[in-house]
Image (cartoon, rainbow, N blue to C red; front, top):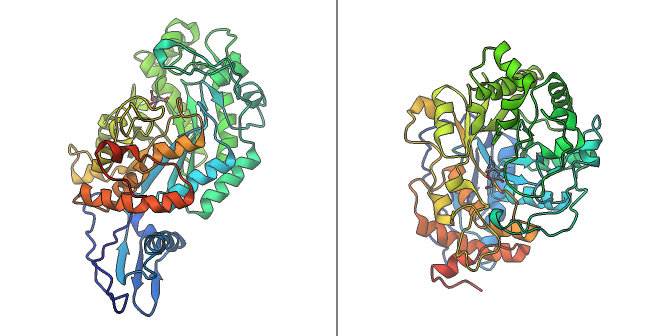
Length: 474
Ligand code: NAG
């Protein structure tokens, strides 16, 4: 999976014989990174020959070989074949929200292992949100001292307002732990992109440093899920704080992109805040959306001055995109289209195809999921290059990512359930493996992988096969 591997049969007498495989070449977009990740494997009765120009290519080749060995364990031999592999997209990512529910270092490492297995190359670590701040920042100790806890958690749906009454946290990663995870990922050729949310989704930070809000506070880390009116106020003090935070973040994470959030920032407080209104006037901004753009531009300028780039959710388009910013298109595909048309890179992660917090099977029998129905077939069917783009614009589609928001995901077993087997479909989309697509063929390969997941002790969604009336292999 995630590789352009095809073969016909294993000769019964000889066990192995050579076959040639025709690799469909991706047409658009041209992925300049693709070459870096290309590899070939030549399996003949005599030897297995791997070649690549890069260490990363060798690593990817090994992942493919491991899959082949696993798959043919019982056969005692793997079929001869020739593989030439090269990814269609440079960014093949998975996100994990560790704020709504926390996952420890060992679990995060396991998550990274899954990405490596299926040849994804980017781990988007959602480290701050209203319900918890999870990264140690030495200059601001209250972020983890206060911001990494909440009084209780919401248990029911948004509407029924039920809470568990149990304090949650302190849960956070020390800088040493972060370095350890980044190194672990590097060894697996995975880039970790940290996300520090601003200007919205900031309640946990404000609970620790209320002076960064428009009003006095006090504030508390959110116990509910959702969107909250208290956000960072665009005052100098806030920019100093965020720049200092980003300094430590950039020291810990060598990634080219730093994710600065940007989504769902209500403008309620900014509308009533004298300083915000003055700033709008002084800078000739149209309105509060212009102020959001001003906020992101300033942060982008700072991040750029350190030789890095920002990426943010769709809403960073509000009031005009910062000059070098990349967009993570989540509300649909329009953000990605707008970005690409104006010469900005975009990572496609539309909810309808890429939100793994959605249901993937029968809601009656599935554990907690919410927000929509995104079964394996839907993920598999996704084409990250919107039809509205011409070949030139399509080059700005950097890649594809799936997001795992964890409001209703309380333990790692459920994390596994939500990502498997959908992660496999994402991998195929990212590698452009099955263009043209053939879902039935893909599905049978997925079922073939279940025995590997079983052996690894991974919890995965069999229910999707139940509802389509399929027999689940033992
Ligand atoms: C969105 C929020 C996110 C939330 C998720 C649930 C984004 C960029 N923002 O409303 O905080 O957890 O949906 O599906 O997705």
